[in-house]
Structures are given as structure tokens and as C-alpha cells.
Length: 131
Image 1 (cartoon, rainbow, N blue to C red):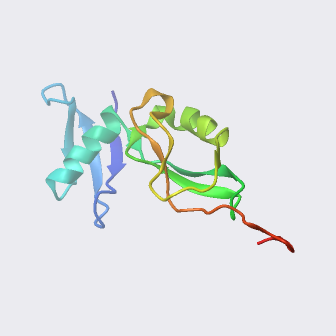
Image 2: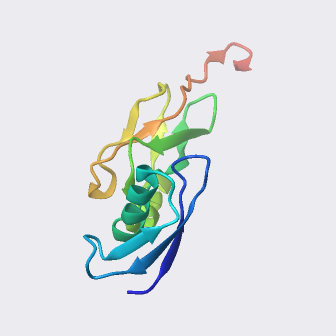
Image 3: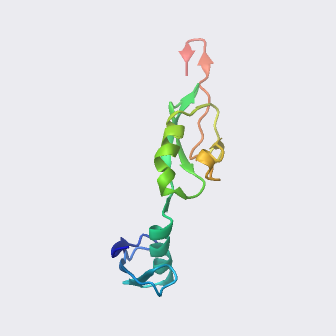
């Protein structure tokens, strides 16, 4: 283990925390530079089990828009971001879609769903063409 620097993103302060290896500490590091308990917890999580919220788009079939913005319903392990993106990139959904609708359940076995970030209606055809 070596010394690490983590910049906290929990609040607007953006504390620069220094994590020095220490066998006596519960998680193996002495942490300095945080101004609140949340910062310390963030640093530990970022080093031991980093996670991310993922945002992207998926293809839409028969919709007024061709791409649907989506996001994870929670955090996924950082090491699964690329495999989840590959699954998302291969996903196509048919309109109509409602905001909050689950697009992919339990993506890559993470227990987290991919949900629609907006609604998209179906393209309606008129006598003069598509509207």
C-alpha cells in the first residue's frame, strides 16, 4: 500500500484528503484533510470499493427522438462501468417511454437498474406524412 490523495466530491468544499497506510487503522489508512465525517467515509469507500452513477443514452425505435437519456438507479462498481456501457450501447427501446421507466433490469448483475431520464412519445403519422 502507498500514500494516496483523494479529493472529496460529497460537498462543495472539495477537501483534499491524504491517506497514509497505517496497519493500526480499521481500513488500513490514517486519513487527514477532511472537514467532516462524510469526507472520511467517502475517502475510505473511494479506496476500498469505488462506485459511480452512470449516465448515457440508448436508441429509441419509433420515437419523436432517436436517443433516450438514461441513468443508473444507484451506484455501480467502478470496475463494471465499461461492461455496463457495452450493454447500454447495445440496447434499443421502443417508444413510448416514460421518465423513470426501467430500461434494463439488474445491469451486469449489479442489482442496479438503468432508468429513463425523460419521456419520449411515439412518432404519429398523418396523411401528409410523419408529424
